[in-house]
Every structure is written in structure tokens, then in C-alpha cells.
Length: 203
Image 1 (cartoon, helix red, strand yellow):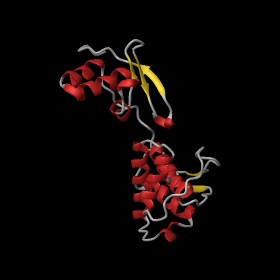
Image 2 (cartoon, one colour):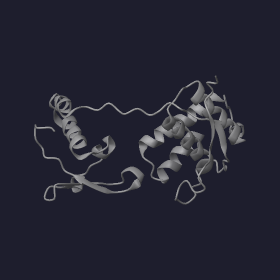
Image 3 (cartoon, helix red, strand yellow):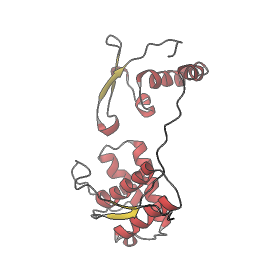
């Protein structure tokens, strides 16, 4: 009985990013160029860190020493993604994230088109995350004080991401409407969320 993981093609979308083409500074190193392009395209800092980490692992995996070794792209990407699935036993979402990072650096930084990638696909299913109950969350919050406690209350009560809470400004808080304005959130979009009541009660 075969235990091999299935092979399935990654087919890159024809228009992955709806921004103008950015030409990075040619004097910068590859990862620095990648960071420059991602910031010009308003990617979140978490995505930037994740994508750069994947590209770093990709270069180390193939023991590359110069940019010329990055092409042709397809067989190198296939080998890396297959290794993640077979030896790394990563989840499907993790393999997809690695593919998106490599697709970004080739298309948006190196301006190299990537064709169909026929790699071994990850099969480990995503698991339901473990979350705190309301009581457990309260125990964590009351154990804190000062600014850290305020930030955690905003995250918990308003559904903010960590960096969104840390970037809040006074003008983003509307006490009359009990509303927070999240500027330049995920996807470079603004949105509104509720301003949680400042209270020792949680849940």
C-alpha cells in the first residue's frame, strides 16, 4: 500500500498584486530589496517578516551563493515545497504561505515569471486553535497592569491585532460613538470596531 503524498500543481494567479510594478534599489541585498518592495506595497510587518524568513530558508535549502542560482525558478520551488511536505510534514496553510512568499520574491522583486509548480502537496490538516475561556482571559488581564493591560483589553474587547492596538492614536478613539478606527489594517484597509468599556470585568 502506497504512503506517498499526492502531487498537485500550484498554479500562480495571473495578477497576484493590484499595485504598480515597483523596481527595488539595485544596490540592496535581496532580502532588503524584498522589504523595500513590501513596504511600498503596504504589506503588514508580520507578513514581511514571514515572507523574508521563507525566502531565507529557501536560499539556505538550495545553498545558493548568488542570484543567478535562483533561476530557473520552477524546479527549485518544487524541490523546496516537496521537502516541506515530505520531511517537514507541514500543514497545508504553511506550505501555501511558503509558496506565496517565493512567488512574491520572484515576481515582485526579481521580475521573473513563475509557471506551474508540480510539487508534493502537504496533507496535514489544520487544527482548531485552542482559545481561552472568558474566565481564563479575565485571569490573564487582571494579572497585568498599566499600559500592557490596556493594550490587552483593547485586543480582547475590540478584536484588534497586536500591532493595530499599538498603533492606535488619540484621534482614532471616538468615546461618543464608542468606536475605534483602525487605520491601515490588514490589506492596507481602514475599518471600525467597538471601543470596549474600561472595566475590571471581562467577558
